[in-house]
Amino acid sequence: MSRFRRTLRQTFTIARRDFIATVFTPIFLLFLFAPLIMGSFGAIGGLGAASVSGGAQEKTRIIAIVPATTTRPIDEADSRLRGMFRSDEAPPELSIVAPTTDPAAQARAAFETKDVDASAVLYGPLDAPQILYGPRGKRSADYLGLLAQTTLAAEKLGGTLPTIAATKTQITRSTTSVGGQHQSAFFAVFGIFFLTLFLSGQVVGTMAEERNNKVIEVLAAAVPLESVFFGKLIGMFGVAVLFVAFWGTVVTQITSLMPAAAAVALGDLTPAVGAPMFALLFAAYFSMAYLLLGSVFLGVGAQATTMREIQMLSLPITILQVAMFGLSSAAVSHPGSWLATAAELFPLSSPFAMAGRAANSPELWPHVAALAWQALWVTIFITVGARLFRRGVLQSGSARPFWRRKAKAVA
Image (cartoon, rainbow, N blue to C red; front, top):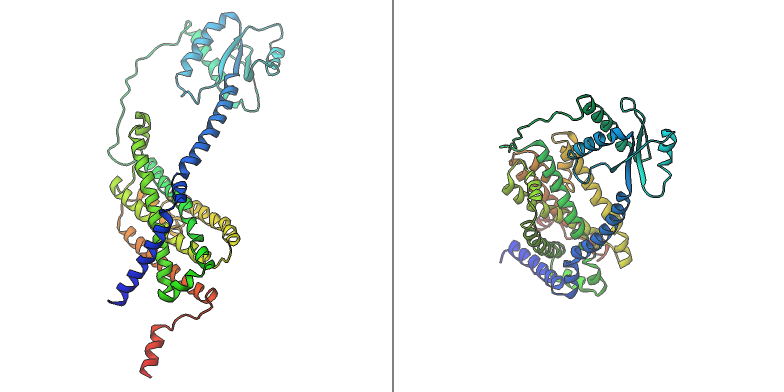
């Protein structure tokens, strides 16, 4: 058996060992359903916040203090204008109040009542109205100004505005849009960031237990450390693939039940390379992002001696991942800029930025070069991490380089 085949076999032996030790445990089920648990808590919190917000919204009003002769025109104008807003963007409900002897004092008193929360109050003649508004009532005040203008125009035209019969035709683009490409790029960057943030951090502690029970010394005596490191990384990557495959299947089944409006919104995501190639590149760059970050975390975590040290590493690891996400997000927002080039060349941000580039640019050859570049850095990180572990933890020198061994043999 050749040296390469023996090394490859040893690597996959370590990978299979770590994969089985991780997956075939009850704790893995808790890890697998962690998104569901977190989503449930998030949904509960969201429902609570929505109920509070909805309760407050129900009591919020905009108030028009106008004479009885203006009540019907302003109410009709309000109904016409509200048809232009979505339900979540519509202004507060309109309350029409008859003026007293002092409309200005009446308008100010509307903000002090306990029955409703006045967002904005209009009083005075419609051609020069006075509008008072609260701290969050600027848009409501603008709406009341538009409402007064529309009502006044209707009154001057005999009580109603003329109706028109507009012909509306929806157009479907035959090419990708710039907005759709940018949305796809951000989706790719965020998707890889979320998956690596959730999955790659577990690589840090993979060697802690084996260091404590001295198993790592047995492995290091039987298998090259590079094979141990790479095998553990592949084993954890297998766990990540299983996780993504499980939830990917669940999500695809859920999206098939989505309403038509949501399906149309997803249809606006139009990557420049096409959906099938984009999905393939997304999977490839997620793999490289996991391997790159995992190899760094594995090398750093291997230097930790206790679980406390591993826990202390969680903060800088998270900061590093967020920094790569921020850099890549800025890069895909400015394709072709020096920032995008820097993000595509820097090893740890390259998978994120190149996934965004797949959405913004139809060229395919840069992705071949990028994947080779990222694979090279995975090898470098694994080699450096193994050597640091050999020298710093095992307290043994590294093997002689092959050129020095050859020179010695010739001598």
